[in-house]
Image (tube, rainbow, N blue to C red; front, top):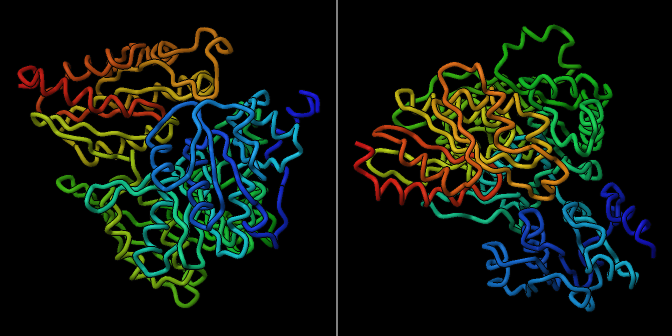
Amino acid sequence: MSADTTSSIILDPARAAFQPEETTDVLGATHFIGIGGAGMSVLAEMLHERGVAVTGSDRERSAKTDRLVELGIPVAFGQRAENVADADTIVYSSAIKPDNPEIVAAHGSDKRVVHRSDILALLMHGRRAVTVAGAHGKTTTSSMLAHVLGRCGQDPSYAIGGSIQGPDGTTIDGGHVGAGAALVAEADESDGSFEKYHPEIAVITNCEADHLDHYGDETHYRAAFVEHAGHATGHVVICADDTDALAVLRALDPAVAAHAIAYGTADPATFGDDGLNGAAYVHIESEREAAETGAEHFTLHLPAEATGGEALDLPVTLAVPGLHNARNAAAALTAAVLLGVAPSDAAEAIASFRGASRRFQIRGVVKQVTVVDDYAHHPTEIAALLDAARRRYPHSVIRVLFQPHLFSRTKFFAHEFAEALAKADDVIVTGVFPAREKQEDFPGVGPLTIVRESQGMSGVEFRAVDDMNLAARMMAMRAHHGDVVFTVGAGDITDMDEVILHALEAHRESCD
C-alpha cells in the first residue's frame, strides 16, 4: 500500500466501519494507538469492561496509562510495528500521523483499522445514546447528565473526555460501562467524525466557529452541525442563546426541527412566531448567585414537549457557578427528563454535581489567595469563566495565567483571546501548547501574538512569558490577600497549580 493511499485512509474519519446491527463481539483483540489520550483511554476502558481483549501503546507514561495498566490493560511505550502483531482491530485517532509505524504495519497486514469514532458509534448500538456536541461545554454538560442519570438509578454508560469531581473531592474517571440502557458521550466535532453518530438525543451546546484548520470556514463548520443534528433518531436539544447554534436550528429540516427543544435565557417572545423553526423552548430564568457559596439559582420553564405531559416550572440550584453552567444544566436536565427521569429527581441530583475536573476546580488556598484551575481554551469559554469568577468573587482581584492551546487557534483568535482575558485584572500569557501542531508551521505565533492584541485595552496588565514555570512563579509573587489566581488552558498548564501554591507558601510574606 502506498503512502498516499495510507494517508487518505487515515485522514478520513467520516468513513464508517461497522453496520448498525454489529456489536463489540466483532472486534476481536483490539489495539489502541495513543491509548493515553483522553478520548482513547475512555474507549479502551469501556471495551475492557465489556470483555474485549484490549492493548495499547503510547509515547510515554501518564496518569491515564497508569490507570489502564492497573485495570489489566497492557500498554507498550514507544510505537513500533510489532505492537500490533497480535491485534485483530487497530484503533487510531486524528492525532495519529499517517507515517506512524503501527498504523503503517496495520495497513500492510490488512488488519481492520478504525477511527476512534467508529468504536464510540459501535458502543452506541442498541443503547439510548445521548451525544453532546459543541465548541465548548461538552465535558461539563455530558458529566452533568451522567451524574444525574447515575444518581437517579439509571446506571448509564458514559464516554467523557475528562474526569469528574466526586462529592468528596476525589476524581472519577470519564469512562464507565453501566447496566442501564443509556449511553452519554461527548461528540467531538474537531475532525468531522461526529457526523457518523446516530444518537437518540443530540445535544448541541453551541456552534461557535472553531477547528477552522479542519473545516476551512464557518459555513462548513456550521453545516457539519446541521448534518449531525439530522442524524438524531429522537430529539435535538440545542442552545438558543448562541447565535451560531440558533442559526443551525433555523437551518434544520422542518421534520428534524419539529422534534427539537431549544433552551436559553432569552425571553421566548424575543424569537417571534417562527424564530425557533417550530422547536419547543426551555426558558432559563436566572435568579441569583450567592457569592459566599458560589451556588447558582435559577428556574427552568419546561414545556410539555420536554416533560411528555404538562409544562412545569423547575427550581434548580447548582454548586458550580456561572450562567454558562446554568445553560449546561438546562441541556443536561432536559435530556434526562426526555430519558424518563422525573424532573424533580433530576433537579435534586444535579444539585450535588461538583463539576467536571479542571472546570472551575479550586486547587488550594494559601494565605487567602485562592488558586483555581480551568480547562477553558476558546475565547468564549474564557469569557464565561471570568464572568463566573466575577459573580463568585465580586470583591477580589482576578489574575490569570493562560496557556494557549494550538498555534492555529492562537493565530485565528488572537484578538478574541485578548478581549476575553481583559475581563481579568492581571494576565500572563505563556508558551503555546502545540498538541498535534508544529511551531515551524506557524512562524511568529506565540504568547506575544495575543499580548499585542491587548494594546489599548484599559485597566488590564498583559505580559508574555514563554517559560511556564517562570510565569507561574511570577504570578505567585504578584498575588495578595483575597486575590484569585486562575490557571487556564487545555494543555499542561494545570501542572502549574502546585508551582503557584508552593511559591505562595514560600513567599507568604509577599501576600500580606
